[in-house]
Image (cartoon, rainbow, N blue to C red; front, side):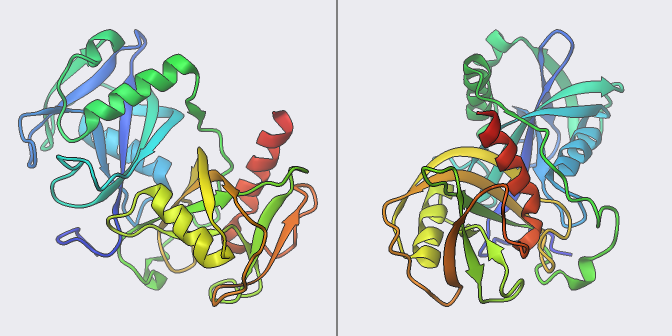
Length: 306
């Protein structure tokens, strides 16, 4: 199993959790391992191939580091910026997905990773220095909470392969991070492209692909749209993150979905896609790649509710 002993071509997907108690105080942990041993941080950790999805990662990491059982309330944001100095993690280029969670039950327990705990009010959190880039995550959380921009966690989940061993077919023994574009026309129809590369040859898919070390998510999304559609684009707001086990048949993928706008409809066939079309959200093609019928149903609900 890949142990993150060296940087691969892909970033390391991680989670960070803003944990709230009944007083709306936020939990900080004092690290007892390197890097930043003795420093205060949020709870966080790496997504593993064995996790059912990224939500599973959150629950697992919080349990391991605090002893608490929690429920996920909201998606906060995604952080991937190679220009940050110091970097979010001194060991690797990471993509961090941050969540707001609330305690269900349990008691705080010291463990090999954590030597102490501290609760802070939302007001005090902004004044408290944190290791990694957790100060930025905390400030982003406070801003989005105040402005009502947190993203509810009630997405559809593809659970057919939960708790089943499919690692024997996984080509990469570490999770990868990808991003897909939600492109709508004036009729609220969604743009899909037909794949001509395995897996899912002949199936319809979102424009998008895997982020590489040194790219921001915006860089990745614009590059993938250029490669797969042949047009320039602008990235919009984050919609949701999908990462259910076996979503990709041969890899453990974490996939973010962003709204995007394209600057032309002069699509160009290429080595990945041979057809392009807008589809009504209530009349989608039968062959949808990567079990993306789940995010498509969530997008339909979101658009119709708006």
